[in-house]
Amino acid sequence: MNKSNPMTISTLSPDDFESTCSVFETSIQDAFEKEGLDHLQDDIQSEIDHKKQMVMTSLDTTTGEPYFLLAKIEEQVVGTISFGPCGEDIQTCTDHQLDEIGELGSLYIMPSYQGQGVGSALIKEMMIFLKKQGVEQFCLDSGYKRAQVRWQRKFGQPYKVVEDYWGPDSVHMVWFCNVNDHLS
Image (tube, rainbow, N blue to C red; front, side, top):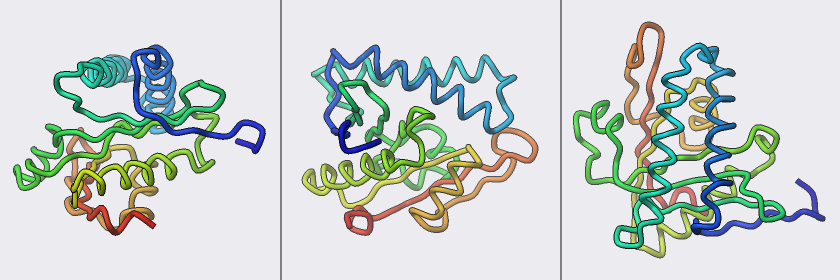
């Protein structure tokens, strides 16, 4: 990113559907590859399809959930983040202890924009939104080793760590956080 191509953050609109889906297709494939899991093509496609369905649900004005924010450069979506009801993996991993807590999710950044502050900007804007909505806490989860390292730096030690969740030698982590702790 540079000054001549400033990043903007906006809410999801129907015009963003294709560009948002492109972020999922590219970044989910990339995440699986970097985890050494690119042979799991059915799982990759399932994750992409799930995220596309979340976008479609979000665009349904009767629910408004999940709520999506997009990072754009030159009107092209380069990153996404969402907030909505707690997902099945978190429910399972926490024995339903966080079912009433909303989940921060769908944080995907195009590979060429990773490590440039896009994710941090999206998180910050989402925290501002959540605070305005009166939301005090959120949870998030990850089974990606690379993301887990980042989330531990940003959100501290996980609330729950589940060994062998996805199979042998896989770890799934869940964080339980206060919005106010991540506003600055």
